[in-house]
Length: 596
Image 1: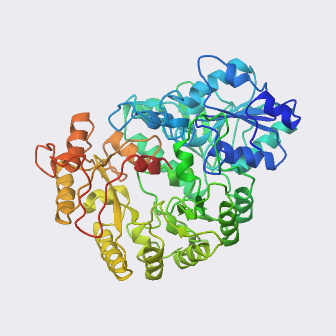
Image 2: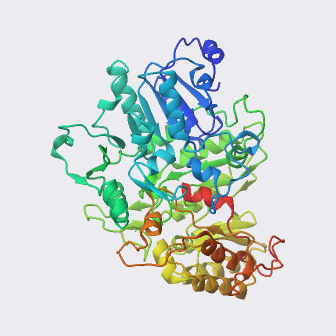
Image 3: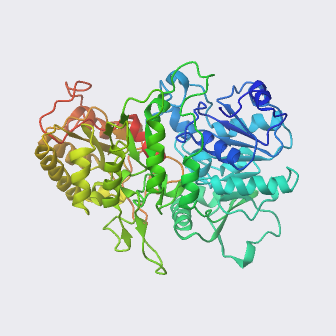
């Protein structure tokens, strides 16, 4: 049974009132790949009555109000992507589709959806506690640079006029908030000032609990006068997520917010329990057309959360954390067995992995040693980081033996530098679990640009390509690497792009699409873009105008390194395969990966 989306569905369950109303900018797909369903099922599992309103109209409150006023609070998320990223390209052009909407139709959610939905809830249910979360709110939790308006914006808690913002993965926080609101009679969310993983307004006289440390971030006015202060604030938030402390405070105009330290992650047993909940793995019947994101994720299994890479352009480490939280082997195998019984099962598991597929069971062994790194893998792997890739290989092989499973593929991408640390994993992956194409994210070949990205040097990618070709040839398979490439990254020049174009040309690679860097809120790379500095404060070149960004873009997609960046007669044509390690560059999938 789906979670209720209407009064009729509430009546079928015998419910007269919801405890929690979840509003989402995505379609309602009852799958762990969709945040609203995941959190809704988690709350339901703990005894709360939960309803979902998916992609409500925003001209009036009819959709928001159709199940009545909930007893405790309304939770709002823009969906799996920041709504501005879902709507606009790297050149601020409107997108023609939306993977989280039935039929892939664009325009089913508003710009700045979290703010719009919050306004609707306040109109429909005055005084109802309002909690916002999801990737849009999480990455906009502090003063941030907004690419689409080319301006600094206030913390989203203030613009949405919400009572509480939950950042990061929300399961433990949401349960704590629900319990405290239930104990308080469903009022006073704005008084919850001791919950980790939240952002709230600072009121006179407030101090951190237990005499914990409190650090002031640069305020919004100071940032407007001196853009480099955005870098200071971003790095401070990155350290807070890494270290679990301190509390942070930031002023925006006449108001001030507090960012509590991150919440403790779920234990493995809880994560296993979460993914064992009775998801239908299909869209709600109200969806009149297939949801593209549902089709992509229906037969995929998430093995872990978090990413140790800490790439400067990626939101994953700031949202999910750098520590790896892994499900148990038994939990993963049980989920695969359930998928094999799905009515639409064809025998193929599309993906097994997470933010980086080969980080399952990786652990940090530093113990009491303080961590000062921004990445566990660059500029070189940390000696305390212990990968579990042999166990990953064994898991993939075990999944392939589950009755009904014919093929097991890894489609979520891997860290090639990490893979090269354990040759047995690479052998198992390439010889048995690549479905013709393997996604890798070299991003560039300029070591200077790669260092700014916090990516491994170009030599690491070249070494992996050699191994990939050797193993594929030995296995008698024609397989290809799909390289994710990026143009116009902060610090990247036209000459850097020509270097990348020449590198590709030498190997006969003809990328059909390349991702132009999009400054998404909250990341270190976005602070680099806005301030024109590297994290250490040195000045860097930034391609900011659309003409310069397009010129860099076309050096790969059209100009093949010609000084004018002109169009290639091959642009948009079929990929010409001249070797065993080649493929098209990233398109929309790369945009989704960066958002986390």
